[in-house]
Length: 286
Image 1 (tube, one colour):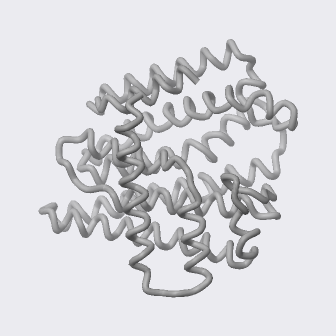
Image 2: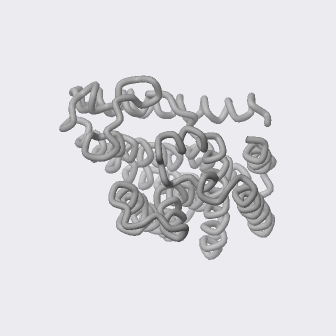
């Protein structure tokens, strides 16, 4: 994989995050908590996907604000996941989790603030497209479609539901585990793909195909990650691990299926940006 090339995208996201944070006029502990959470490391995988997908389209629209929005939504979900009433994590990326550093109340309010700021960024990205010559009607439609997608994928049928099922499982059969994965993991990848497509100038009529690509990519990502975590998850008695559930051979077959399906869907969408496929090769090698 062209690490330097991906590092360039990561630096773009980091610089944009810092620039956005520095523009905040408010000075408060809540603002500091938001900054701490946003700049606490991370690979920026999801916002990079937004930028890569937008870049692969011929229009060369700027989707940076949409990419930041994804990182805001993702960070907000991590803040909530770490709370004592959820996963009760003390550390996040080798640093104190936000509620340990700033207190639970501030952490919850920071999560709310980041979600609100994410929607603000989507609206701002739509306004930027208008300035670049996109008609108001088309730009407004993109904003509405983007906000609808984010709302669905973070709500009762999305990441919130996935976290609920993770905390309160009824029974761990295969169907429930895959549904939990879809809601906890695939949903944020769908947001990344859809925002990159919409704010990159992609045809809104092809959104269902874009969602399908995201589904296969997200499932492949999770299965590849499960290969890495299989031993630790077994020792910790964590049930949601596809490799431990299916066995290595069946899990590899399923991983290959999702990788192949993702590749085919991308080709149909003419999303032939080479780095996307190099990412898939990296997943295969994991």
